[in-house]
Image 1 (cartoon, rainbow, N blue to C red):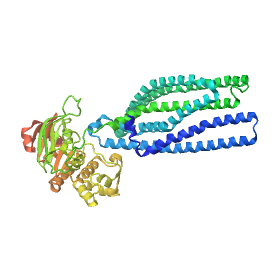
Image 2: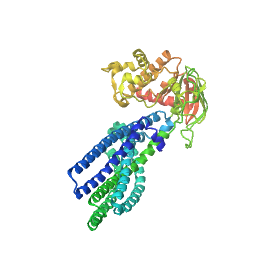
Image 3: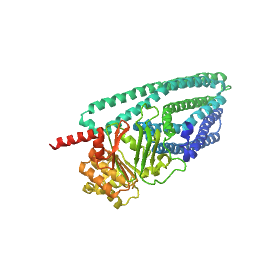
Image 4: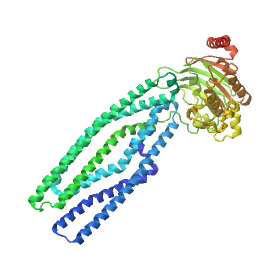
Length: 581
């Protein structure tokens, strides 16, 4: 885990290494200051002249200024290293997620990935900052103060040998109790964020069903659950602070009482007033260093689970990668499914697709029809290799899709998925997702084909109209037509419309299909639809049922020979007749 995380330090290695070195010098200077003060007190007790006091004063000022300089420098390098480390972590996680296949993404919920890239990274940033600065300063201060305490106080410093092990045992017990709770809390954080995301995305549904009260109660219950666990963890962690203070203050009381007794009884022969004052200073430094170490352990305890969650994302390898010597050119839009069976995971009990055999010629228009859950979308997602087949193979342009470079394959297979997504930006920005270098004329032509030119000129800013995140300020039909135009700009050899015209009227649907036939005849077009009218003029129609192909044929052939197709057609026509009446 540490090796994996350390890779994200990269260009920030220099400040990350420099920080502990600067802190070490700062600590040494701070530990020398009480020693100089002790000597000054002893000299003053012996009746020194003013020149000696001035000399010691200059030494103290120089030490204090140098300590301040090194401390500020350490703070700057620490801030640079920790924030840079966090930036690289987010960068590495985001880039890793971009390479995930759908199967990888299915392992993590969206809310969980968001939590890992925000809360978990912040926790790790704080821990890294403490590790390279505070975690170095605390132990070093403890060690140097301990050594100097023994050098100045002799057996009087033996009290530290009792308090430090006692505190260490207490800290270990606290961490062992708190770690499982923090692990549980972060999983509940994911659930809480999932609830928020679901509520915001479905806000229209929530309001239309007047379920705000229910959603508030659900969120409050989840938040209360997180609060209870965090409170329990904090209560356990809080035990460490009073335990530490009792031990250290008890040590200081011992030093004061027993040390004073030694000074008085030995008349300064065994231990002088200056030594006594320095031991008290070192006791306070030990107290501060123990508090620092305690704080570091608390933060590390919290961030261990965050680190594991981040490493889980970074270590996840995509199941879909380009092979060596990958094919970079797709010859044509022909598609072949040869004995294809598929299931979404190795643990799945049943196949989503079973023994599929289909051969599609380049340029054909293929309709796919079937009931809900018949695996229509699953079938087409195998073509651009969004998933890999479990058995058999899928070929595009006569080659197995697993032999292609992934980018080359997907640039030649454009998919307009069932859930259309537009991003925040102008209409032009969204269209150029299909082709970053598309000209205005090319965008206009794609929009005409997708029938999007009907509504874009009506917007005040036309193609420069701002689209809200998710396309919230356009209708479902407008969103679908923009997504189709975006796909057309890729100039693909295969165009897949996964129920992508469901929100447009039948006239617009027919115009889109007519435009496809006239202007992109060489592109293979696969149209998944719920309406028979959307596919009945296709060259061939595939009827699916329960992950299998029930029949393949033209509209007329299927009406005669396939009961499923006939039933769908009859039902939809009856509904249309009733609407007309």
